[in-house]
Image (cartoon, rainbow, N blue to C red; front, side, top):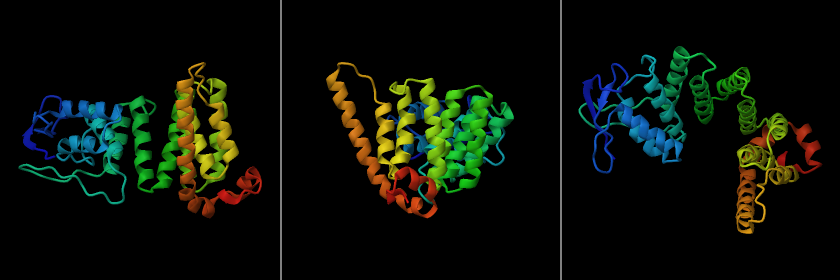
Length: 296
């Protein structure tokens, strides 16, 4: 799909000094402006749309703006966050280029995530929801680029910011997200300890069988299973199972989904074993696994 970028300035709904965007075209070739592009991209992201299309949709507007020098702007922050989260984290992705009178590459996802982080903290307090989202996004993007030290520090900030706001649920989810980060780095003992502690606290605040608990439970279970701690994995999955009453068809569907989940994560155990074997907290895992060396 081609994209057109105009050289005119000052479009309605565009950040000051940003180009008017004649594109990217929809399937019916209707041109759209900045505000419409961001709205469509937000709708796609919210409903699980194709990340590649979100990137393509925003590439035209963003190709005319330098994230290193752009002024803080609410709409540009939203575009930057959507773009940064949608970019394929494959190594060294090729820059997306626009076509038209003044083609140019779009700055990478890290640059746009850093812009959103700086700009959000300029326009808002650091514990504002947009500022926290920008912090989470920058951490996510840095993790995908293997910049773990800075990402770790940002995730720690997010944990504290949620606590400062009094949002205990978000605080616990952030703790489990940080644990997943540690797990990916091979710090499995620390990760599992922190994740299971947060899950236990979550379970005292919520019914673990409530659907709101399921994403948290699955994240904890995935870490346990990847390290070969099968019994603990099954315990978490069982504790979080949905209460479907007498609806046997639905119960069977959920059981099938659980089986598929466990099968998928069993395969991930092979992938994780490399980093797990190299950097694992052997004492903690060996004691918990009772001699099972699949996670060591």
